Length: 233
Ligand code: FES
Image (cartoon, rainbow, N blue to C red):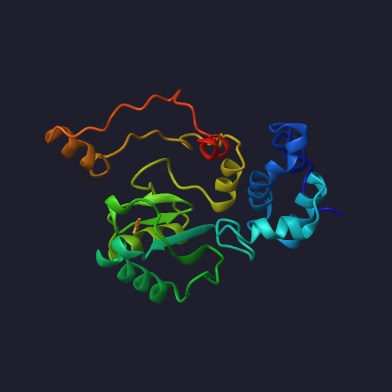
């Protein structure tokens, strides 16, 4: 018997219906998030489920699931804490943040605390270098984080709290986040928050304005030359 509920099956049908009938395999990425939202990771049963509803084989699904780090292949904590230790964050103290959390939680990379609450991981650049060092919890950002601040966040999570990230809505669990990543609205009050770009992100634009630097206009209707047309020149 399938481990997946009828609600998940209905959602799977809804996801598949978003794509043209002859392109249903394009639904695989959101479907993997969907199965992760139910089990907390992409289990062998999850792979089998995706293969079944898309008419693929398990090897095809597994090849995709193992390619992306957002799909977890073993049970993951309620809160996935990802600390950026790439170049920019590292020189600003990211490794110190990671080491402090690892020692405090007693876990290493891709390991989960005994209470099942926190999974810690090293992350490559999280595309927020202007706020480094950064860490994310279930992909929501904590900017300019330091070891004490990071400890405060994980302790609040372990005590049952849901801290506010620097940007975005109050934290949700990894399973709740997976529902959103599968393309379904999170109905919790305050689950979604808007936010414009901050000053560190706009710094380059401000400098360009200040120095009168601009780029030539781009006409979006400019035809894109095909390789064949280029070859005939
Ligand atoms: S190096 Fe950390 S966000 Fe880019």
